[in-house]
Amino acid sequence: MDESFANLQTSHLLGSVPAVISDDKRSTNVPIASVNEAGPSANMQIFPPNLGNNTKGYQTLESPTVEGPELQPSNNWKGFFNVYSYTQYFDVDTDVVLNRLMSSLYPTSGDFFNKIDANPDLYGLVWICTTLVFVLASLGNCATYLVKKRTDSNAPWIFDVNYMNLAASIIYGYAIIVPLGFYFSLRYMGSKADLLRFWCLWGYSLFIFVPTSLPLLIPVEFLRWVIILLAGSASSCFVALNLRSYLETNNDITVVMAAAFGLQMVLSIFIKVWFFP
Image 1 (cartoon, one colour):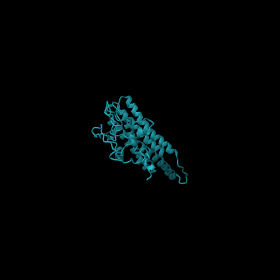
Image 2 (image 1 turned 120 degrees about the vertical axis):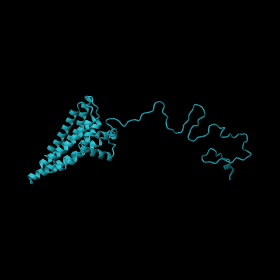
Image 3 (image 1 turned 30 degrees about the vertical axis):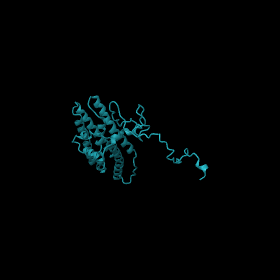
């Protein structure tokens, strides 16, 4: 090899291999310190290493220590206009919903508040009201069609879209405003009241009108009145008896039960008169 290339300084070049130093040129005066005498042991997770003073380098990742009182877990409420604030009220299993639906069909038990005490939901209110709106709008039009064809088979028939608007306004308005009115009234009278539980109760009380809307298609007026009065009485008893068990220490419980019973009956009669004439 050419000596000009052999004498080049290559220690500053990246990837270069240092030259081999012969044994006679190696210095013997430099002591090799042991690992224990060199100071703190090297740790690849700590940079720079702790030198024994107050200086702390980049320490290993650890869970942060909280000084003082323990932090309380944050609730799920993020504001009235945040959708995530209401997800906790819809976190309910299908089996639980079916159990509450079956309870609404047995109005004399009066233990509905005990079943929803751990987790009152708004899922039943929204689902039942939405289903009932579509059922009333569709079956109401079918009922008018059957009545018109029965009286005059040649008479023209037009689907009435206003049934949908009216059903949505009445059902949603009733399920939201009526429990709200009872809540403020009972709070004003000094009674305990929970708005979420009231909404849950009134929502499930409307479920009985969903299956009973189908036999209302029978074009027999007397039978229609019997069906709707039975359904209205069952729904009214469900609300009134559960309110009695919930407000058993209230002095005005009779007035509250009568008002709840009467409003449910008014709703059932309105459904019959308007959607199934």
